[in-house]
Image (cartoon, rainbow, N blue to C red):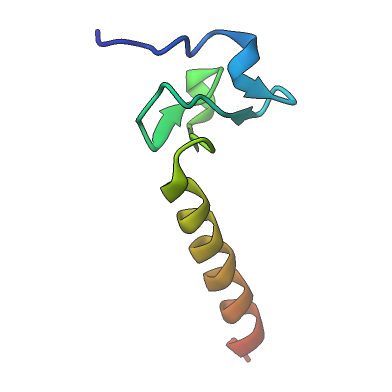
Amino acid sequence: MGKDFQHDNPENWKWGIFYFNQKDHRLIVPKRNPMMGWTFNFAHPAGYIFLIIILLVIIFQTIYSS
């Protein structure tokens, strides 16, 4: 198994749900409970870009689905 970049360190989880670790260069990481899926590393700049794209797709789909 590779480096975990202190994935289990509570200091890297904001409000317990948002993973924020500048030393970890992964964009997508497993959640604290791996059975719950994956989340973005919000310290990675591309994380915000993907989040905005996902939100825009949801908004446009809601507006234009008649």
